[in-house]
Length: 369
Image 1 (tube, one colour):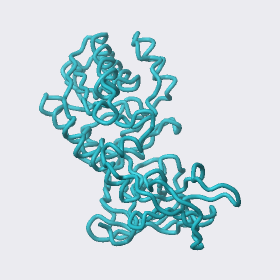
Image 2 (cartoon, one colour; image 1 turned 180 degrees about the vertical axis):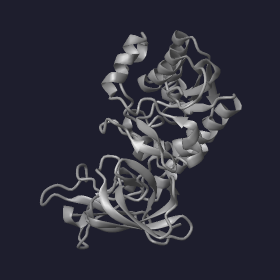
Image 3 (cartoon, helix red, strand yellow; image 1 turned 180 degrees about the horizontal axis):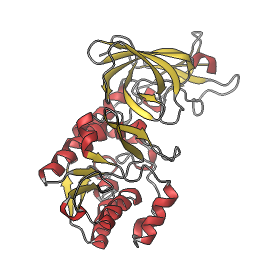
Image 4 (tube, one colour; image 1 turned 120 degrees about the vertical axis):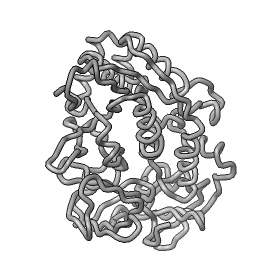
């Protein structure tokens, strides 16, 4: 049995590698070629920055596609580019804009995996006769007693399991993640050994359709008039100042509030209907329970409740909680100790030690709409 879990000679097993143009997916492809698989590189053209900022040929529509093609040429494998701009715009960008207008803090990368990469791309790979879709994500796919499981990466500083909680069981059976067991430094060494020009390419820090991290400027173009002024209000009711739009704030934010002096203040919540930003001391961020929607379970479905660890932001460590299932793929999450900086629109991911059990989207109120 080869490294992907298939019987027979690797050359008789066709696989598709999702090629983003970065070092991670490039090394994933190189490792598959090295092992002798019948490899096809596939890149999604998702977005042209010119739509939002007037800058042509960036990210998912320009240099990255060129880099992916160069890597495929170097490895001697075919490279396909699929135009998914329309699909990406509807499923990811529009959702991103609407979420911010509702006072949420969205994670478009998760929606992209859920609605585009692990759905449409996986289907195309299957149509091409591939037995697996390989990606450069830092997660582990492990065969457990009751089937395929999703686990954190060996390198905790690179772990991307939080962003893959929407993966379904059928998708996980088809997916492979060859980098989950290695640190980033080893990945770059592999790139150097294979002579890949992307070996030193920096990791992308921005959302692909938000150049230079300026999501406010993108939102202004997508939703003209989105920047509507309102009051900055202390939790005790005192009006402290004015702001230029709630989309410029996120729950837990401390810097850049535009109100100086006095005790340190944090954004406690956002009120899109009244356009108010509510601020207060750190203690006011304490959250004892939250509600989530669109809950996805990987593996055995929980019937009533489960004790596990939950992660409410990609930058926060997992904390103990109890998850109570409700109707229509909803759940109530009760923290054993208060959690801080919980924001609607973020993901709440459930873990059993290193294993991903599933997760859902954090909502503002119990009436999950």
